[in-house]
Image (tube, rainbow, N blue to C red; front, side, top):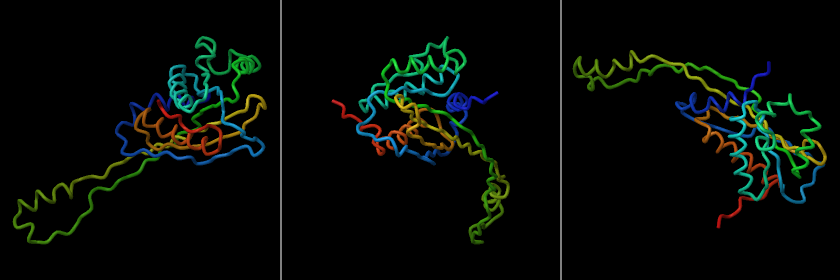
Length: 220
């Protein structure tokens, strides 16, 4: 059975990584179809989070919708187009019917987001290292004891670093082909909002740079 990484990732964020000390995200690979000419930015887009968990998918898609709308792009979500009782992955709606429903919405492109893999690395952090202190500082046993005890007896510990690998693809509805793709990684995200802020900034900046979307609209 295929692991539903995206659902596990988004559901685990608030609970598991609140104690993380750092968060880092970056695009690790990017591709743009050289044959596709972007005469103007995307006008209307279909967004689909690749998860069988409806709540997880809805939350991610809604957040992405906000980002695209702020740049003047109309958005249709998979959670809006396919009712929960009908859409549980790809088992209940034939491929042809799904394509027809998306075309009827007159979307130019379809965006998919998928979590490809998760890797966890365990590292040992040694205890406090001994540092020489002038003899005069010790003076007596008591001062020496209270100064050195934490150093001598402080044990090392293990830390875990979890890295999440995501893929974001953009497909042309008219040409039925992949036209743009990025792979990104997130290290120890501290929560959904923190992760999404970093992820969306990366994706939106790259799409704007590639001429796929326009800049964020100024608020009146």
